[in-house]
Length: 239
Image 1 (cartoon, rainbow, N blue to C red):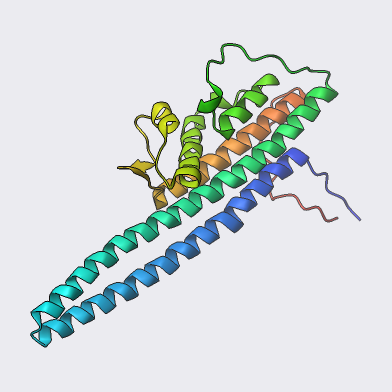
Image 2 (image 1 turned 60 degrees about the horizontal axis):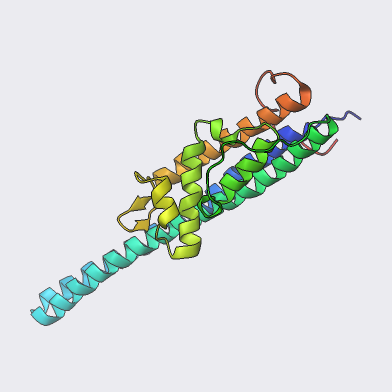
Protein backbone atom coordinates (compact mmCIF):
# COMPACT_ATOMS: atom_id res chain seq x y z
CA UNK A 1 0.00 0.00 0.00
CA UNK A 2 1.46 3.33 -1.04
CA UNK A 3 0.90 6.58 0.75
CA UNK A 4 1.01 10.13 -0.53
CA UNK A 5 2.61 12.86 1.52
CA UNK A 6 0.17 15.70 1.96
CA UNK A 7 1.55 19.20 2.28
CA UNK A 8 -1.08 20.81 4.49
CA UNK A 9 -0.45 24.27 3.08
CA UNK A 10 -0.93 23.01 -0.47
CA UNK A 11 -4.04 21.26 0.80
CA UNK A 12 -5.41 24.59 2.08
CA UNK A 13 -4.94 26.16 -1.35
CA UNK A 14 -6.54 23.16 -3.03
CA UNK A 15 -9.54 23.29 -0.74
CA UNK A 16 -10.00 26.98 -1.49
CA UNK A 17 -9.92 26.18 -5.19
CA UNK A 18 -12.60 23.54 -4.60
CA UNK A 19 -14.72 26.01 -2.63
CA UNK A 20 -14.61 28.38 -5.60
CA UNK A 21 -15.00 25.95 -8.49
CA UNK A 22 -17.31 23.36 -6.98
CA UNK A 23 -19.46 25.51 -4.69
CA UNK A 24 -19.41 29.26 -5.31
CA UNK A 25 -19.19 29.24 -9.11
CA UNK A 26 -21.95 26.62 -9.64
CA UNK A 27 -24.26 28.41 -7.20
CA UNK A 28 -23.77 31.70 -9.04
CA UNK A 29 -24.20 30.13 -12.48
CA UNK A 30 -27.39 28.38 -11.37
CA UNK A 31 -28.79 31.62 -9.95
CA UNK A 32 -27.98 33.55 -13.13
CA UNK A 33 -29.52 30.84 -15.34
CA UNK A 34 -32.68 30.71 -13.23
CA UNK A 35 -33.00 34.47 -13.26
CA UNK A 36 -32.61 34.63 -17.03
CA UNK A 37 -35.46 32.12 -17.38
CA UNK A 38 -37.68 34.19 -15.09
CA UNK A 39 -36.91 37.36 -17.04
CA UNK A 40 -37.56 35.63 -20.37
CA UNK A 41 -40.93 34.29 -19.23
CA UNK A 42 -41.92 37.64 -17.75
CA UNK A 43 -40.95 39.57 -20.88
CA UNK A 44 -42.81 37.14 -23.13
CA UNK A 45 -45.94 37.35 -20.98
CA UNK A 46 -45.81 41.16 -20.97
CA UNK A 47 -45.47 41.33 -24.76
CA UNK A 48 -48.40 38.97 -25.19
CA UNK A 49 -50.58 41.05 -22.85
CA UNK A 50 -49.71 44.21 -24.78
CA UNK A 51 -50.54 42.57 -28.11
CA UNK A 52 -53.90 41.38 -26.81
CA UNK A 53 -54.77 44.84 -25.49
CA UNK A 54 -53.75 46.46 -28.80
CA UNK A 55 -55.76 43.92 -30.77
CA UNK A 56 -58.82 44.66 -28.65
CA UNK A 57 -58.37 48.40 -29.31
CA UNK A 58 -58.33 49.12 -25.58
CA UNK A 59 -55.94 52.05 -25.19
CA UNK A 60 -56.30 52.20 -21.43
CA UNK A 61 -55.53 48.52 -21.02
CA UNK A 62 -52.64 48.78 -23.46
CA UNK A 63 -51.10 51.68 -21.53
CA UNK A 64 -51.51 49.74 -18.28
CA UNK A 65 -49.67 46.76 -19.75
CA UNK A 66 -46.87 49.02 -20.98
CA UNK A 67 -46.56 50.53 -17.50
CA UNK A 68 -46.47 47.08 -15.93
CA UNK A 69 -43.76 46.03 -18.40
CA UNK A 70 -41.64 49.01 -17.34
CA UNK A 71 -42.11 48.09 -13.69
CA UNK A 72 -41.01 44.54 -14.48
CA UNK A 73 -37.84 45.86 -16.13
CA UNK A 74 -37.02 47.69 -12.91
CA UNK A 75 -37.68 44.57 -10.86
CA UNK A 76 -35.43 42.58 -13.18
CA UNK A 77 -32.56 44.99 -12.50
CA UNK A 78 -33.16 44.68 -8.76
CA UNK A 79 -33.06 40.88 -8.98
CA UNK A 80 -29.81 41.01 -10.95
CA UNK A 81 -28.31 43.29 -8.33
CA UNK A 82 -29.32 40.90 -5.54
CA UNK A 83 -27.80 37.92 -7.38
CA UNK A 84 -24.54 39.88 -7.63
CA UNK A 85 -24.72 40.76 -3.93
CA UNK A 86 -25.12 37.10 -2.99
CA UNK A 87 -22.04 36.18 -5.04
CA UNK A 88 -20.10 39.03 -3.43
CA UNK A 89 -21.01 37.88 0.08
CA UNK A 90 -20.19 34.24 -0.69
CA UNK A 91 -16.75 35.14 -2.04
CA UNK A 92 -15.92 37.34 0.94
CA UNK A 93 -16.99 34.63 3.39
CA UNK A 94 -14.81 31.89 1.90
CA UNK A 95 -11.87 34.30 1.67
CA UNK A 96 -12.19 35.33 5.32
CA UNK A 97 -12.36 31.71 6.47
CA UNK A 98 -9.33 30.75 4.40
CA UNK A 99 -7.15 33.68 5.46
CA UNK A 100 -7.96 33.01 9.10
CA UNK A 101 -6.99 29.35 8.65
CA UNK A 102 -3.74 30.34 6.98
CA UNK A 103 -2.99 32.84 9.73
CA UNK A 104 -3.19 30.00 12.25
CA UNK A 105 -0.54 28.19 10.17
CA UNK A 106 1.62 31.32 10.08
CA UNK A 107 1.41 31.77 13.83
CA UNK A 108 2.21 28.12 14.51
CA UNK A 109 5.15 28.10 12.07
CA UNK A 110 6.53 31.30 13.59
CA UNK A 111 6.28 29.99 17.15
CA UNK A 112 7.95 26.71 16.21
CA UNK A 113 10.84 28.67 14.67
CA UNK A 114 11.14 30.94 17.69
CA UNK A 115 9.93 34.01 15.82
CA UNK A 116 8.04 36.58 17.86
CA UNK A 117 5.41 38.99 16.67
CA UNK A 118 6.72 42.50 16.13
CA UNK A 119 4.86 45.75 16.72
CA UNK A 120 3.40 47.55 13.73
CA UNK A 121 5.03 50.81 12.74
CA UNK A 122 3.56 53.74 10.92
CA UNK A 123 0.02 52.36 11.01
CA UNK A 124 -2.11 55.47 10.96
CA UNK A 125 -5.50 53.95 10.22
CA UNK A 126 -8.12 54.46 12.85
CA UNK A 127 -10.04 51.44 14.08
CA UNK A 128 -13.21 52.58 12.30
CA UNK A 129 -11.39 52.66 8.94
CA UNK A 130 -10.45 48.99 9.09
CA UNK A 131 -12.54 46.25 7.58
CA UNK A 132 -11.86 42.64 8.61
CA UNK A 133 -9.29 42.22 5.82
CA UNK A 134 -7.24 45.20 6.95
CA UNK A 135 -7.37 44.03 10.56
CA UNK A 136 -6.25 40.57 9.53
CA UNK A 137 -3.56 42.09 7.33
CA UNK A 138 -2.17 43.82 10.44
CA UNK A 139 -2.01 40.43 12.21
CA UNK A 140 -0.10 38.89 9.28
CA UNK A 141 2.20 41.90 9.32
CA UNK A 142 3.14 41.16 12.93
CA UNK A 143 4.84 37.99 11.66
CA UNK A 144 6.43 39.59 8.61
CA UNK A 145 3.93 38.65 5.90
CA UNK A 146 2.67 41.73 4.08
CA UNK A 147 -0.66 40.98 2.42
CA UNK A 148 -0.82 44.53 1.08
CA UNK A 149 2.24 43.90 -1.07
CA UNK A 150 0.27 41.64 -3.41
CA UNK A 151 -0.83 43.50 -6.59
CA UNK A 152 -4.43 42.30 -6.21
CA UNK A 153 -4.77 43.41 -2.59
CA UNK A 154 -6.39 46.74 -3.46
CA UNK A 155 -8.97 45.00 -5.64
CA UNK A 156 -9.75 42.47 -2.91
CA UNK A 157 -9.83 45.17 -0.23
CA UNK A 158 -12.47 47.08 -2.18
CA UNK A 159 -14.41 43.85 -2.64
CA UNK A 160 -14.54 43.50 1.16
CA UNK A 161 -15.70 47.11 1.56
CA UNK A 162 -18.45 46.44 -0.99
CA UNK A 163 -19.48 43.26 0.81
CA UNK A 164 -19.72 45.15 4.11
CA UNK A 165 -21.90 47.76 2.43
CA UNK A 166 -24.26 45.01 1.27
CA UNK A 167 -24.42 43.36 4.69
CA UNK A 168 -24.65 46.46 6.86
CA UNK A 169 -26.17 49.32 4.84
CA UNK A 170 -28.42 47.79 2.15
CA UNK A 171 -25.73 48.17 -0.50
CA UNK A 172 -25.01 51.86 0.10
CA UNK A 173 -21.27 52.60 0.33
CA UNK A 174 -20.44 54.23 3.64
CA UNK A 175 -17.97 56.97 4.38
CA UNK A 176 -15.06 54.58 4.95
CA UNK A 177 -15.61 52.98 1.55
CA UNK A 178 -15.86 56.36 -0.17
CA UNK A 179 -12.68 57.63 1.47
CA UNK A 180 -10.73 54.48 0.72
CA UNK A 181 -11.90 54.15 -2.88
CA UNK A 182 -13.23 57.42 -4.35
CA UNK A 183 -12.94 55.87 -7.84
CA UNK A 184 -14.80 52.74 -6.85
CA UNK A 185 -15.29 49.76 -9.08
CA UNK A 186 -18.23 48.07 -7.39
CA UNK A 187 -20.61 51.02 -7.10
CA UNK A 188 -23.04 52.26 -9.76
CA UNK A 189 -24.64 55.50 -8.67
CA UNK A 190 -25.63 55.08 -5.03
CA UNK A 191 -25.57 51.29 -4.69
CA UNK A 192 -23.10 48.43 -4.90
CA UNK A 193 -23.37 46.53 -8.18
CA UNK A 194 -21.45 43.29 -8.65
CA UNK A 195 -21.60 42.19 -12.28
CA UNK A 196 -20.87 38.81 -13.84
CA UNK A 197 -17.54 40.20 -15.05
CA UNK A 198 -16.74 41.38 -11.53
CA UNK A 199 -17.53 37.87 -10.32
CA UNK A 200 -15.17 36.23 -12.80
CA UNK A 201 -12.37 38.71 -12.08
CA UNK A 202 -12.88 38.20 -8.35
CA UNK A 203 -12.71 34.40 -8.56
CA UNK A 204 -9.45 34.63 -10.51
CA UNK A 205 -8.00 37.26 -8.16
CA UNK A 206 -8.93 35.44 -4.95
CA UNK A 207 -7.46 32.17 -6.22
CA UNK A 208 -4.21 33.91 -7.18
CA UNK A 209 -4.08 35.77 -3.87
CA UNK A 210 -4.61 32.69 -1.70
CA UNK A 211 -2.02 30.67 -3.65
CA UNK A 212 0.44 33.52 -3.14
CA UNK A 213 -0.23 33.56 0.62
CA UNK A 214 0.37 29.80 0.70
CA UNK A 215 3.69 30.25 -1.10
CA UNK A 216 4.73 32.94 1.36
CA UNK A 217 4.01 30.61 4.27
CA UNK A 218 5.81 27.71 2.60
CA UNK A 219 8.83 29.94 2.04
CA UNK A 220 8.83 30.87 5.72
CA UNK A 221 8.34 27.27 6.84
CA UNK A 222 10.90 25.68 4.51
CA UNK A 223 13.40 28.50 4.33
CA UNK A 224 13.41 28.50 0.55
CA UNK A 225 11.26 29.57 -2.35
CA UNK A 226 8.96 26.71 -3.41
CA UNK A 227 9.78 25.35 -6.86
CA UNK A 228 6.98 24.55 -9.30
CA UNK A 229 3.23 24.81 -8.95
CA UNK A 230 1.12 23.75 -6.00
CA UNK A 231 0.54 20.03 -5.87
CA UNK A 232 -1.42 18.84 -8.88
CA UNK A 233 -3.43 16.74 -9.28
CA UNK A 234 -4.99 17.86 -6.07
CA UNK A 235 -3.93 15.73 -3.11
CA UNK A 236 -6.16 13.03 -1.67
CA UNK A 237 -6.34 12.12 1.99
CA UNK A 238 -6.93 8.48 1.08
CA UNK A 239 -4.12 5.96 0.68
